[in-house]
Image (cartoon, rainbow, N blue to C red):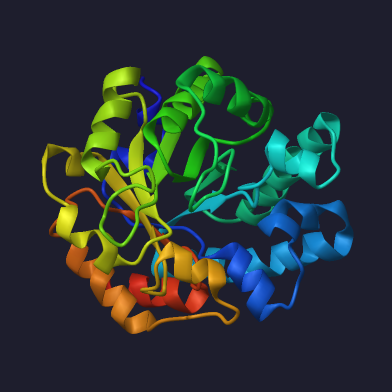
Length: 308
């Protein structure tokens, strides 16, 4: 059995939901402070852990109500060495945060069917405009620390969210392969449908597949509005895309960086756009949201989802 065949969202095309824009929801809806956009920092105490628990519960309930599976993405997008160090945490403490994140996901899936625990990995640098580009080897070494922890937990897979260039995605993939975990790669794009590195989306997916023997279980897109990428969804590589976590806002990354208020967009319009994309992405079945989205947006996506 291959790595990808261990994941129920890959074996067929049944709908799997995931959560929305966790950081923006916690900051703007809950009034919480997340230094460096690090949701994992909330796991430092019971109050923060309870806030995370409350955040995830509506999504798990929605998946159950819809008869869909759920990919429980850990709140660990920033839980890697560089960001932990900037927050004053050592590697032992970082290991503990990642373990507590998976334990919280285990708690959430009790009593629910078809819940996949995904260890969330974020970029080593800025998720919109990286200042340092790692080589494939350096990226593998960097991400091996967090992924090594996930391999010693109940995590079913790893998902690299908001990858901005192919070499880092290759490093993440190799780190996951080394410890026997399936991996999904999620790229972000600018308003022209290209990665922040300038590379075409299809070329990035093709490069990662070529360098890893098509090892990722699937690819995703996140942190961009559908209008930013729908025009570039053309080519054999679209068969590899199963996941989508779009922004609610049509704003560019630069504009979002400067925004002081949340742009929630239109949940119904977003849901309709997801449904329309199923004709362009034939295997799309893992859906949630990114910046500006919450459980209302994911409910709208699920409500608009076409029968297959």
